[in-house]
Length: 243
Image (cartoon, rainbow, N blue to C red; front, side):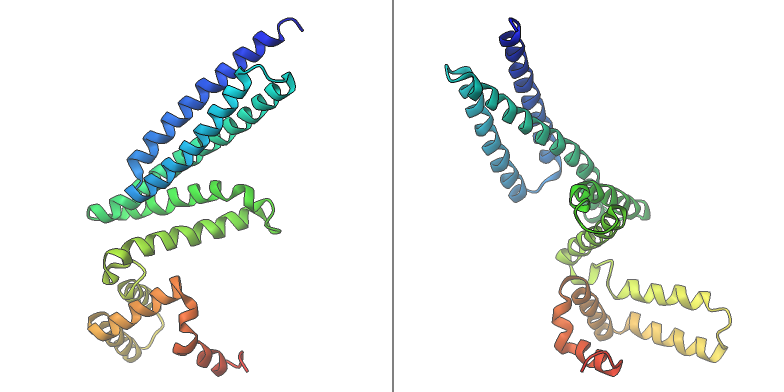
């Protein structure tokens, strides 16, 4: 019992040191990967947390009721656990953002895209791990679905923000997909293969068709509700799935 104040002193100073380390690590990671607007928001967030930590530290250092001092220490411990989680999460996010940035600042290679998908999947699975535990379905299925959707959306919005024609989920991807499927159809009659190849060529080379296909895929990925009056309702009625 006689060592309790000393133990508390050591504990609070250790927590203060860890908090400072976490802040420095987070600052470096965000500085290397974030844009200026996001960097400002992150800075505001961690400045607010730092003020809370400082208030609790000063509260602990003052001559207040011992139970309040212990309460401050418990909250500081909780803050450091949150900071540790933030460091781990940001460490997973950094290679993902780096891969995304490489895809738009340099000539994007197949390896860059593979890295973007793989690092994005790891990051989002970790980010939504706690949410998956209360999702009502298998956590593995939940995180897998969320990671796939978020990574796809990030890549789509990243490319579409630069130029609608450069979206990797645009008309050129659709044309390449059709060519790939056509090459796999070994039993397709020659005359049908010729017609299919001409159709794909038209889709790939005709500017109007290319623009409309890209716009359709953009709506499908980002704003599917905009397709309601542009053909979705009629399509469902034709299939007998909408009254």
